Image (cartoon, rainbow, N blue to C red):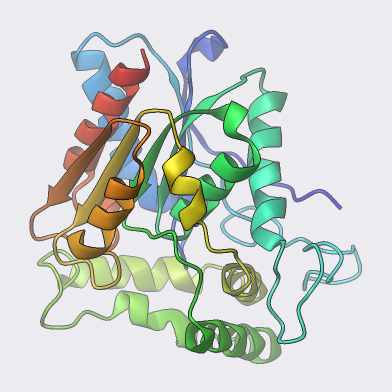
Length: 294
């Protein structure tokens, strides 16, 4: 089976395939809607600065938003074959590859040969895998609040356990921590509006879709070897209060990309979901990347 993606188009850029679209890849455990304000800001800033119109997309990952969970047609839970096979511990070692192929297929089906790929958190894993498998489809990369490392053994086990819980009980509770702030978190994440929004978005995801993404992320490869071979423009963006991908994590990622020019943007008082917390600042950094591509 080929993974199917629901594509959300913020602007079609006049469907001019001579331009380069920006493809926004969302984080876990939400869907494309985390990009809504940032995509609007990117479009508006581009118009204000006289940049030639370009398409802005945000497809939903498999199992999120309106994208179906990869299935054998006999039920909502993906078959092992759909996901490229399952390891003995329950992780999908080829799930990320299958989804990377699906994103590139979506791009080519629309008549484009390359895109500016923007990935936040789990979305960053995906765009690095696109760079690994389909470098010819990459015009530029923006790595937001992410990392190139594979999961530790403990984290892999935790993801698979969460997946099993979500599949068997239909619960969302194991990932509700994304909607619960701590005293060390950013001002935005500590706001009632943030907590309500993320709680709503998480509850709207299919539980088996959350499970599929957890198994996919658990089985993903280490992607650090990809970094030194990247030779397209790159933007690295992170929040100074990101608990998992702070500047101390993102700076070595930027430094490892020795064959290209990397710009790094650190956003003050910002947590993990930078594009949601500070959409205007992330959009400004993305527009500079668009202009570098030309």
